[in-house]
Image (cartoon, rainbow, N blue to C red; front, side, top):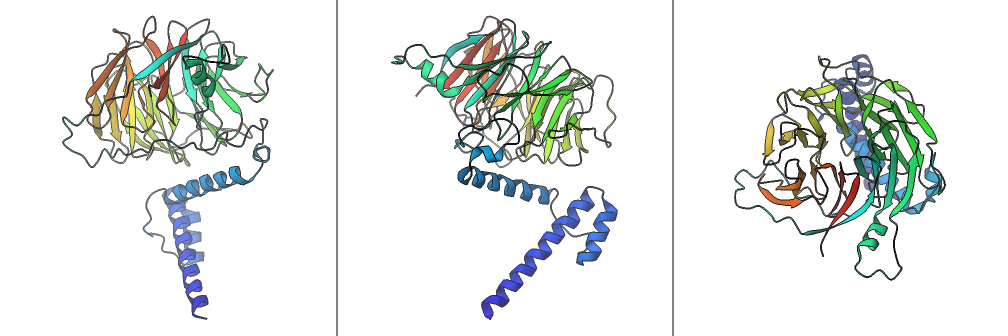
Length: 437
């Protein structure tokens, strides 16, 4: 009896917590009438104290755990609505070196910079025109590149590593496993579906295209979204159900991947004609997204309501903000601009936390990236044609490496799971970099 009573108490407590989360979620997203009705029906105070977006955070974590369990115990093909099945490890989170950086706790960090490990590099392939962008899959098994020649190349990372071995007994290894041709203007950005064997591209031809890379002979997209503007950047929600498109329009276009219905935020700040989006990226849970714009601003948006949460106006002065992405814990945003600075911003306050200087980038729409454990920041110095690396915590420049491209690299993309990255060149070439063991 006593055990049953304790269980009843626990169930009641959980029930009240769930009600509080629902009421707070509705209230904080301006659904006042629904919040009042839910509060009245469940006898929950309308002003209940719940951290912002707590319900979304818990749901995202629960879905991630559920997805992992399904991937362990179910046939992969049962999880896919489109795209053929691949081994069940595709899309699952691969073990990566834990992120240990907390930028808020350490004040005086001078003299404590870490050394960036030595890397070896190899020329992988060439496009017929400028290599404009690259993206790794979330599990780090694949990397794709897009070009001004309107083609997309897909590489298997394991084959790249095999190719880099000094004595390969299997003869020449070809790491390019697919090449897609379906755009009629240059490719601007790429992303992978988190569970399906689907690669997504955005291009100047105002389209977003979906390619099934499980099919050996497929060269064309099997689904197409026709936008109204040049698609400059894309980002897929962690659930795989929604896709953001940053375009020449100042507001990101949100698409339902299943219906292709497009949504625009109705609650936006005043943005001028120069607010075209250079990059859009979701946070790890999808609870927020960030845009970097040609007007120099970095803007934070609610991932559910699409409401603008914060505008960091003139984040890069009057120069374009060319890239922006969240840290894994969603507490900070790393941005890059044509003012030759890389900056780290506090999401909660909008204040500048760190500034990484010593690399000049004023021409190309380059980006700054963290390495896989967020201990280092990488970007490009255009005049010297070098890759510049900073200690993320101390903001001290710790390395400058020749890019081995003819002319400055246009794009850097780091693997999310290991110490390896891709550089794409104005010289049309693609290089792979990995830590020397």
